[in-house]
Amino acid sequence: MKELPKVFISEPINPKGMEMLEGKVRVVIAPDTRKETARALIKDADAAILRATTIFDSDVIRDGARLKAIVRTGIGVDNVDLQCAGERGIYVCNTPGTNDETVAEHAVAMILAFAKQIMIMDHAVRTQNWKERFSASQVDIKNKKIGIIGYGNIGFATARFCVSLGMRVTAYDPFVIKAGEGVEMTDDLEALFKESDFVSLHCPSTPLTQKLINRKYLQLMKPGAYLINTSRGDLIDEDDLVHALKEKRIAGAALDVFSEEPLPAGSPLLEFSNIILSPHVAGSTKESNERIAVAAAQAVLDTLAGKTPRHICNMEYLSLVPKSAFFA
Ligand SMILES: NC(=O)c1ccc[n+]([C@@H]2O[C@H](COP(=O)([O-])OP(=O)(O)OC[C@H]3O[C@@H](n4cnc5c(N)ncnc54)[C@H](O)[C@@H]3O)[C@@H](O)[C@H]2O)c1
Image (cartoon, rainbow, N blue to C red; front, side):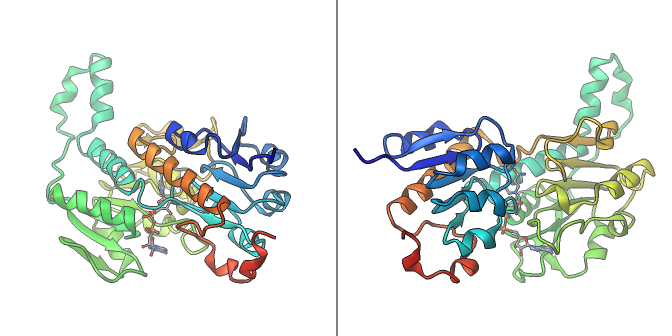
């Protein structure tokens, strides 16, 4: 009997996606996210489903001699060497449209948590500090200014939610010209930092955006302003952020993503009470996890059936390989 194709999965996905693969492929779920583990298990895999933590660099990809598709659950493909995969005729896909509003909701939750001082108020009640109710440290969200950096799917969804809350929304994105309703586009990043009460990051990690948010821009922010990051940790120079927080240059930061994940136990970011932290979960809810797993499983099944999967992210490198070579 012909052996079923093998699919490497870096971390468990929602059962709906597993059901789709059942009986059609052999699934191997990695016991951990280490590179050595990926290298050992990828050797005879025909496809891979990858979450954010496991790195598929050229070493791992070259070990996957039979690989035809690497599918990222979610959006960011910065943990995959797109060129190496493309040159070997391997599709790299993601699953856009499955968690845009999910991430936007998380960003808005962080904004509201700061505006209403939810963490501080919770702590006050737990520590019998009832007089915190007289601090009047909470603010209205209506008419507050938010600057959105990266006006793609998630930036757009965040902007829409913020407009509906009565916020004044400005977006910066050098690759987008058209603003949505109630949103003003700007090409002046410095002015955006100077004027915003909240700055929310929604662009991918690229050589152009890494450490984009550094001392220069943090110094421009109002002392009462907050920085929100649900995109990628390396967009922020974390040393500069720690400095800005120590110097009370800004009022706080909410971070779902970090330059190193998991965030190391000794990180200075853990020392500030005016930082809200979450473990890279902005895109993960019960509902979105199901949508993501279904889309990822479909991309794998399409590829293994000889079809072109949806949402290919390394098209420019795939063109270097003749199509006929893909299933040789
Ligand atoms: N925390 C999470 O769980 C989670 C989940 C999903 C996505 N993300 C992150 O969110 C990012 C955005 O996702 P998306 O679906 O909106 O992607 P998208 O591709 O739809 O939008 C990204 C936007 O960023 C813009 N951009 C690129 N370079 C820029 C720059 N230098 N300055 C300003 N804008 C720039 C692009 O033009 C694009 O419009 C992803 O790349 C991913 O890293 C995080």
